[in-house]
Image 1 (cartoon, rainbow, N blue to C red):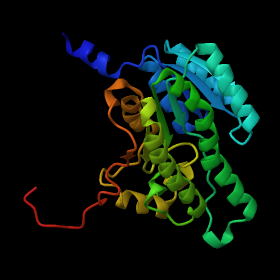
Image 2 (image 1 turned 135 degrees about the horizontal axis):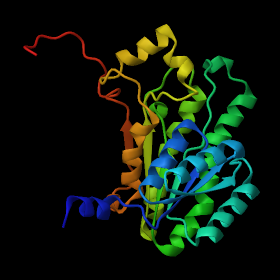
Image 3 (image 1 turned 90 degrees about the horizontal axis):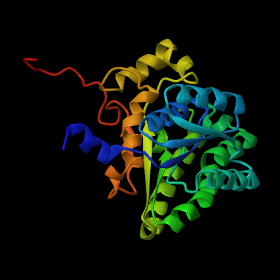
Length: 269
């Protein structure tokens, strides 16, 4: 058997249907494209219909399969109808990627109640409600993979991210609860926690002379991460290659929490 066929057997997503929330975003769109290129049919869900159509067009231009579905993760009725639409379209849902999320960087004492409620609702309640709607499809077919998108702030908190950090810590707690409760249905749940990723929304941080240096000093690989850096682990967790992996957090952070840039030390190299 060739190397290619072995790899295809392990990691191919052909025949799998993947539901993505936050698919119009910088990370979500890249992950959706990556999984489509691995053979999956991707159901792109987001509130931004115009951007969804752009992502769908890019995927189809590369030979992938995609459909668009307007989804507001704050609207339970919309979630129900959207998931039903996807289920009826494809007949099954094999993978759920919970990627929808927002943030507003401000100090703990500066956060208004409305801001708190909105971040909590989209980042945490949205994951909870979408997972509740998708899980029955996976329970019925006795198979599925849930991939929740965490953050550097899942365990290591930056200043000005108090509410966001609370939601991302909660997402990992949800991940472990799903893994424990749904293993009997052969449903796996894992969390990918990206480090400091450069996207259109974080460009302002990476162009800031103080903040960018602060981040690079703490990244062992001495560069920003990019959405494409996350694709490989997402394919792993969506594929049958991870059939005995559940309840885990995968950090894609360039060596940030490992220790970042080392202090000066004696070496011949």
